[in-house]
Image (tube, rainbow, N blue to C red; front, top):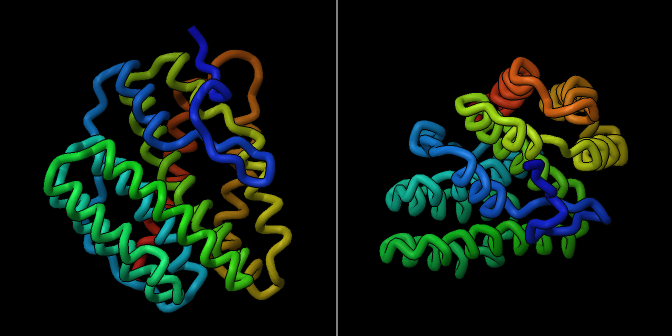
Length: 241
């Protein structure tokens, strides 16, 4: 049976439907028995110097929070809740997530996984809203992009490990890739020339035709290619220099 992403609870980003991460992960649980702990990045999060990289990393860390929730790793969840606060402070939106960060830690202590998911989702929304209020729309877009890249990185790993046509269907998101391409093209010339943003833009060009394929499910070797590309970007986003 094919999956219809339009049936999921979702966010709307400028008329682009973005499936809520916890819902996508829930579907993956039904398709197989993912080893979520194996997907966690356990390296310490460092705060980069460039604001663009901080925004991308903030999105990636929030996505990591959802993975840690699926793994039911309370200590990792708490670490990530603190990381969200540190990164938000580095881009002057700390006030928007103080309460969320404390709540993530408290709910993780009580193993309230549904509550933790809601707080990570709320932290993402609050950070982006605060950036928009500060006229930092580009940074808000980079938060979304960083989260999507980390989510796609782990999604492709899970789907590849237990390949099914239904699982592969979760990656059929051509509108979302086109949206991120438009975001980058509308950024300031300085930001578009950023080495990391340039690399992401080129990778989106490589991913776009694969994700847009209409003739059946995306083949497993193509899933592996997307994983290799997004995994590389996630490593660059997390790099300390």
